[in-house]
Image (cartoon, rainbow over all chains, first blue to last red):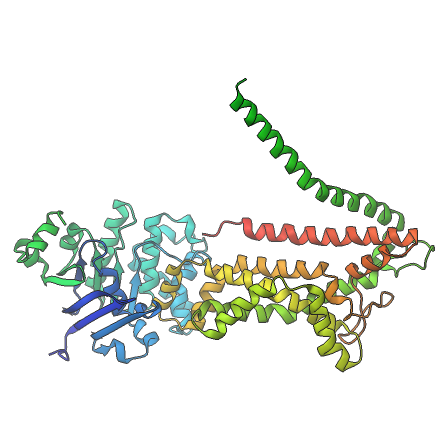
Length: 256
Length: 279
């Protein structure tokens, strides 16, 4: 069943422990290609850990243990070289974290440059421009690509981080509450950027959010996680209109 | 005025008096060095930096070989010590659970307080005796040993100060560990790392004891190779201050001012590094 074609992300029997604490409990789900999955749930429910299990950033955390299988576009994440699998994916973090010592241009260029994805300067320039356009930031920064990122607003910095991730042309984009720390106008811009990505590219998105509104507004599928367990998973419309589980109802109403 | 107010004032007066008492010696030393050093240098003229030292009671001459020696020693010991410190620090930060890395950490902290004369003796035993001669190389090695714990500790702290999120961002881009360290972490921590290097450099500029039995104190010839004898400004001050000759005392004061100015320059550069906002 898990080998079936057409899925961008397949998770089966995933369990994660950190320092002996059981953070993710037997989670399984599948996301078809070119869809947005919103992972929602209250803070501390394990959403960020789930993302970090998918791209193996969890390896950086000492005393962490992962069981189960994760396939990303058919690649078994835990039986491959972690550095190679991470290149299939891009990640945007909760707090904008552009590299403070690199210019706007360098922030986007560093991934392709260090991974040797481009042959020459022209190709790199082209790719940087493409990524910034896809992140809907190009028009705002095209005249100051050499500025340091701290000159940008928080929301612009977050879109810069999106561009940095996109420059590697990831098949799976992981976003950890990307709008949690930006103003509403920028939040809307980021959501628009994500939707247009899905229209134009072969890309699948996993978005972690703690606001049910964002999940409903933007996603095709919703996974509701509570205390490390997958409470409910399905099409967004179904879950928004007919949540089966009592906890989901409460969360959608903002009561959990 | 009630009792509380009186107590308050006494306390304040005490704090002010003690603070002045604490900084007064420093000011006194600094002002003496500037005053007497400037006197000596003005009298000697530019030849103070270009000439060799005088004979007893025979004018002022200059401190050229010692000045050159100090600068060359600092450069040589940095060449020996800084790369080692960098790698030791990176190793300690990147592999915190490795027993060897833990050893590096403990050792570098312990060596911070090692008596410098012991380092001099060590190098005397392992290098000067087997080679049968004092040398710039032996002096540089002793200074490098003095410098390594400082630079290592500073670089370690600079790297540890880089927020975890940048590490994650680097790994999320599919970068190898060495690329994350050298292209991202070192880049973000570069000012702290440079400051650590400068402090190590400044530290060895003024060291005296490690050079006592490693360098050979040839203060009449500029050292031209690592196996030549050499001298340092600090040794010159140490020796000349103990002579009974007034002209040599003056040379010592002038040399002290030269050394102080070198420190000031490094201090200002490192201030510049740490001032710039980068996060």
